[in-house]
Length: 238
Ligand code: CA
Image (cartoon, rainbow, N blue to C red; front, side):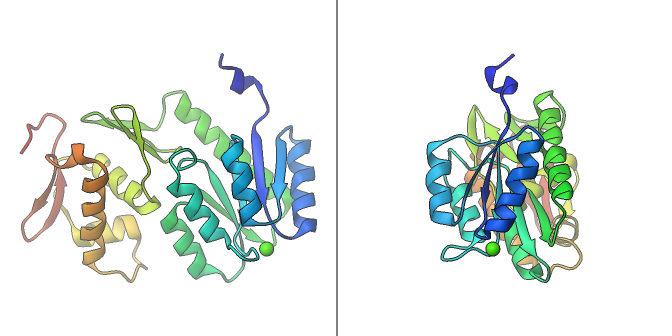
């Protein structure tokens, strides 16, 4: 067994309110997690760059740099791009929640929360990640490996950082190989019925996927007047 698995999971909290920080630390330590924390984004990012953590608990409303910016920076660095992030948001921050999803937080907890709920959600996230390690929830296509619970895409051993939506779009293509997917279907299934975007959103995201994963170029094809199709596994390059 790998040494890390024997060690306690390390959680890092970025939260400016001391009471909440202390409360979370107390409950998470009681569950056997190793917990460290910072009171703002700058200090938090410094620590995350130096030390390896298993999960970040990130408050949205922080002084100076807000949680979304911290999340964006974590996602943009190759070393931390796949680090699980659980965001703490206050009620009524729906718009931020959506933006947060776009930049790739893994889960959300709305304030006010009970510490027990936080512990339960974190445990659930870790369990789902462990399942992935055990070989579940992994999809492979033409050398591209999609790991659903780590939200990780790799190709020939190289990990590619995708945004939440790019990842979900790729997942949807993987699960519907050989089917022509119209832009409307993709908008509804990947973005949801409530989304106000246009079909142009789909084109932009498909273009980004192709750019980030050139291996897709010959297999993710545009169907004129309709939408897109990911060719069947057995298909030859087009
Ligand atoms: Ca705060």
